[in-house]
Length: 130
Image (tube, rainbow, N blue to C red; front, side, top):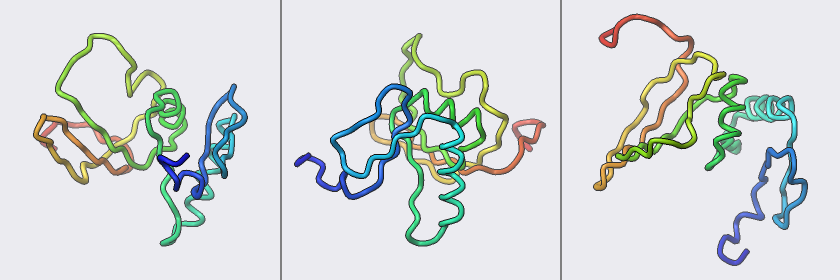
């Protein structure tokens, strides 16, 4: 782990139905949605300067579980200017309706949009001008 020495310092949560061990220190394995919900409750209860966000990097399946169970407070999206025609979808059937507010947005020189969205309560219907 010389290329990423700090990975062993932080607690890592792995949501998997098959993998149950890792060479990384401080790794906790979760298998049930209830364990994810408890982790979220712990995050809220410990919301102080020392608490850390729960982040997901590159797991489209875990994102679906979190969206379906109303466990997403914030989205950081990288939108690339290309179409592939096929592939994994971020918002498949099952995600609960939720409103988000654009908190920040940056466009890179290559046209990639980096967008940060914060949860903003319930969905309100209307027109795009509302």
